[in-house]
Length: 171
Length: 171
Image (tube, rainbow over all chains, first blue to last red; front, side, top):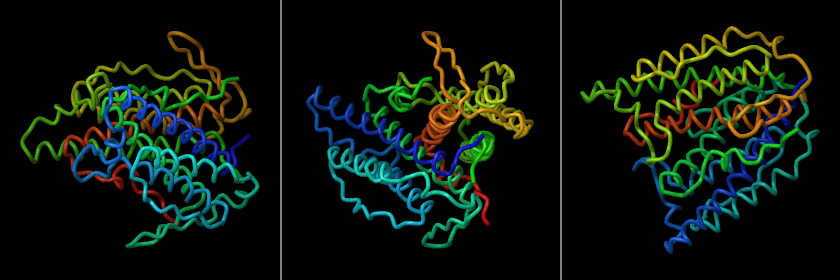
């Protein structure tokens, strides 16, 4: 038995993005209860030369939508990276969820070893589809969702790992 | 085409643990170059009630070895969680890599929907094997490796996402 490339990627992105959305909503509620502006979280960083909170959310979104597009051989929608408020970031996550929900498993069919290319400013990276999913797409996605979580936790928001893991379906 | 449960878990753990080991070695070199004790990292936290650095490494290790044991129907080795130095933590990661390298794909064969049970102090969690891998084992594993990375980054160690991603095999 086995997982298709769809099974190994899209349900993970969707599950974690829904958990991330709930975490962002908790951060807003936390700020409102303490009467400070929730949007101070948007520019928080763990170190001066690290990317701020908003970029963590944007790149998590891009990791997921870019992976879905590349694995299905389609063009991803362009999101403008112009979010400046928590409400904007929640909308960005929602938009990403909506996009991913539109895919069907059969769109990901094909050779597991087909080549997926990522163009970077300096070089092109060429992965097999399997290595792209497990060592690039998922690793990048979880890196940014976890860093976003860590920033909110560092900022005093009362969340725990259960919020990050979300409600995993039980048998 | 598709990934087996082995393909979807063990190569990811191994790849990321090797990257994590290199990151820990960079943190030690960083401290030594600046003539401070590298072991100050061991107890660092991002917030007072978050788990310290050592626990992030221990739980990343446990997530990987626990998943391998559960999916193969074997008993995981007991690691004592007695690491107090960076050298100890590097040895813990190495020990986890050695353990995971001992598995063969055929040990993970079986129904993707077989039930994997996690006993917690309060309740038992029952997942299908597929949901266990993607929503529990990988999510937990990346959560703790990324939090460890974030702690070192917050502590001034000069590492970047490329260190976390490691050298992904190219076609």
